[in-house]
Length: 222
Image 1 (tube, rainbow, N blue to C red):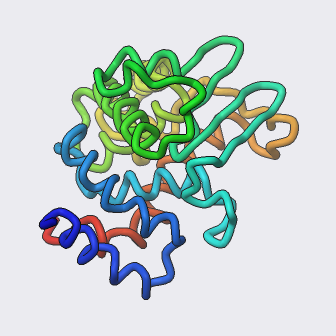
Image 2: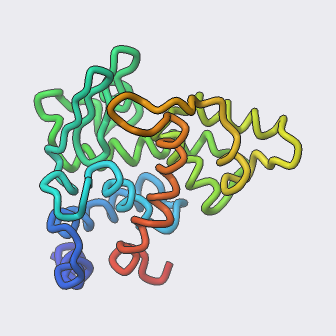
Image 3: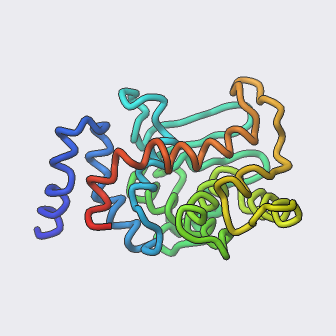
């Protein structure tokens, strides 16, 4: 009962604050799991911004914070709050189930379960956070997010390129690793943006644009 009361005390202000209805519904679950899976990452509103980035073409969209949100193209299929992605080359759904015991029995037919989707996103973030070794604060968080979007190998390559670029600090994202990459600058068909642009916009939009709206509900005192 105490947990329910605390959860409602957190989300009731959001009802008046214009957040997407599903965000109000899932913020308590996100806060709980973030504290368990990635307690070292602050502010926790970053994770809410990440879900918004993954699912919200606009805050009024039916897809926004919707566990049934799907994106299907000839390149990939993504689903859920973290848009867990399956392609011909890799299967993040299968992979994430090997990285956390709570996900081991997750069936494809039950892929729209929001509790497991949130845990899966955070577990993938945790794996990506390990690729940000040597970085701290927002730099580490930005690298974690760039990895989530573009893969650990991509982040390692970008940091290596930065390390070999005069004046570039591989422990810093903003203005450093952010600027160095061998990712394609050619615009993807149907996207209007290149792989480089999409990857660099991902941490910027989450940390600088989207996360701040959730801080009153996730980051009291921190």
